[in-house]
Image (tube, rainbow, N blue to C red; front, top):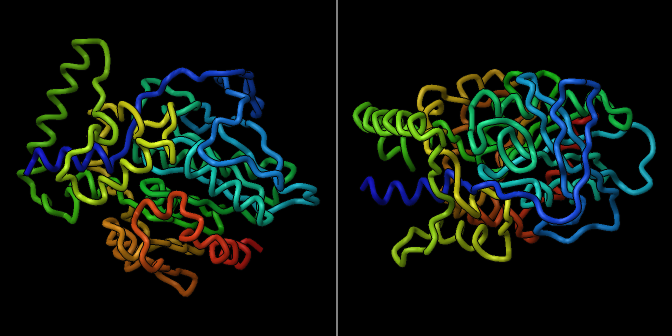
Length: 358
């Protein structure tokens, strides 16, 4: 059971060793902070989706309250005038902005929103050391840092800011909505609750103290080894080669992250994965504890046939108020909502933002 669990966790926890950016690069910084880390960003179009001629694309950076500089792609509607409603996008867990989040951001910009798709702390083109670490606190903070940036941007109406999280970043987006009252509308697409998934395994199959204790023992032993070696062992990205008996959703992950459809050289899931010890903090820190206190609008979107559907359904049960909605997409699996333009309900998502970002 543990061996199977490990394969599944590698695929869904998502992951990929950051490789150095290729092609032409530029230095960029947007926040007035002399201590801000200067990032070197690629200038080539290296996305997994085609560039739109309906939006203006640029690179931006901003810093979170832990001093980590984040890299983002900004998408602005062509010929935009006045201050615009804005949306910050990130995810999936272990992906980079050149994958799903960029596709969402560019598409919503075509629909009239100023958007940014950002790489979370320690991943992609964003800063932070050590690399390939996830954190329930810092990754929630990354969304609020994006709101900082948007709130002070002269093209943005600071009273009309929303966020959108995909997969694991759907959970962080809901958590950010619970703490950041500047966020007026939140969309979580095909969401994971990473803390629940880490602590309980899939479908809560290992929701018991003995299983968690065994995991803590293994992860803390790994900490000792990492310290002794002076480096961090990686957990591995989406399993490759793909076992014949892999669950269907693992095959779906492989079909996205390991093929030209979605592969990216900086994506953790496409390559070597998170640090093995990244899971430690999620064992003790449930991220959705205060979801029931969110007063702003929330839309949860999930596929009918997604293995992860229960995360959205159970989260929806926690939400209160008539501005909360759960939308189930007929026939869709988890990864359909990564890039399947026939399945992602962009019209409904845009309508939701237009309703609540006003």
